[in-house]
Image (cartoon, rainbow, N blue to C red; front, side, top):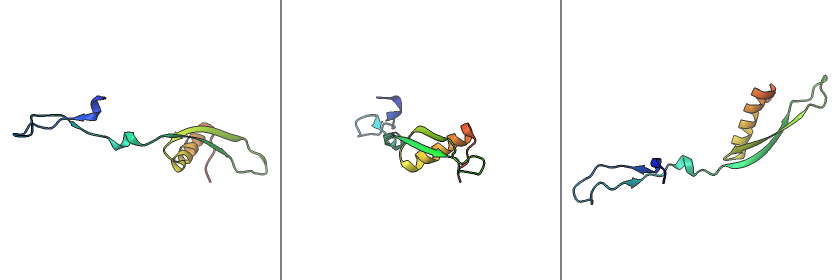
Amino acid sequence: MPSWAFGSRPAHAGDGGGEAAVVINVRFCVQVRQFYIVGRKLPSDSVPEPVLYRIRIFARDEVLARSKFWYHMKRQHKVRRI
């Protein structure tokens, strides 16, 4: 097992010595799923049909996946969420 899974506790009289207690970190138990998110700029007079962008995102739920999508769109393609 990884070293982060074990915690140590001090030895007390009568508990069988200083055995290691298993500590489970809940953050690592969350399932990560794959999402394909599609988005584009809003149409305008100068660009009536904007380019569609599709990104594969790994996140725990759809809300977080959409948030990550717009984060990357803002950084890579200068597209803002309205």
